[in-house]
Image (cartoon, rainbow, N blue to C red):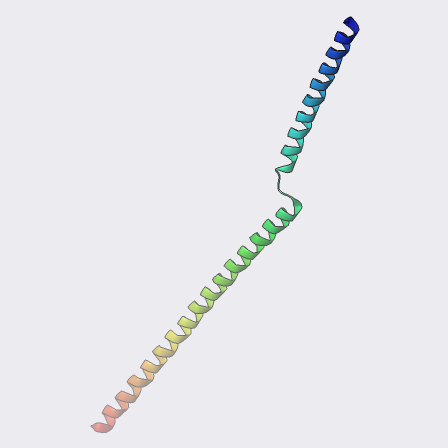
Length: 95
């Protein structure tokens, strides 16, 4: 009877030890599994590069608009100057 109690306790201790080991392994796997995978890292990198490319394109577009606006403003000034010259010439002819 004593041998069966001792054997039963030993089996119980081994079961508890195995369960503890399984819990520890599960926690380790859980911690390791929560980090981003390499595919997620690649996806995040591509997303960041895409965002920076889009921002660069927007900046370039704004710069071109500013440049074009400046060109249009210069043309308007030239046309106003020419118009003033033509009006002045017409006034001189009218006198």
